[in-house]
Length: 70
Image 1 (cartoon, rainbow, N blue to C red):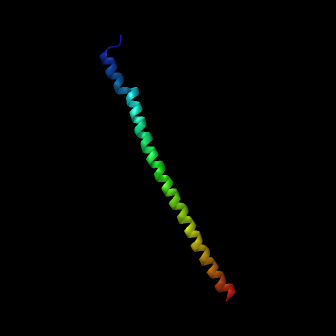
Image 2: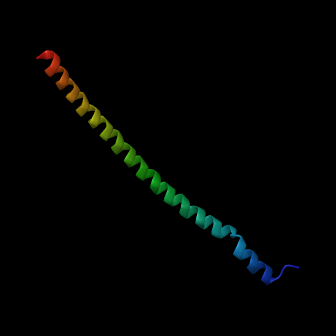
Image 3: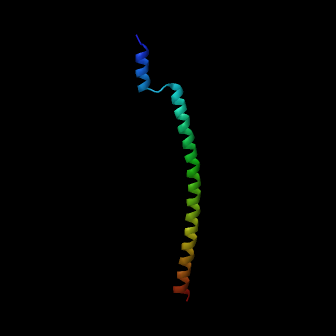
């Protein structure tokens, strides 16, 4: 038969359903926060890439004008 000693030993090995739900909700909340942070970083990276492209385009246009346009 299962007694309290067995239950205590099982509690050390396995997680109860209520505890599992609490742990899972904490992990889900942390992942949601990371998701919004990643969205902000992605937007900033796109803006940075666009500005870098515009600056490089201007430099290339200036070099072409200097060497070919005289």
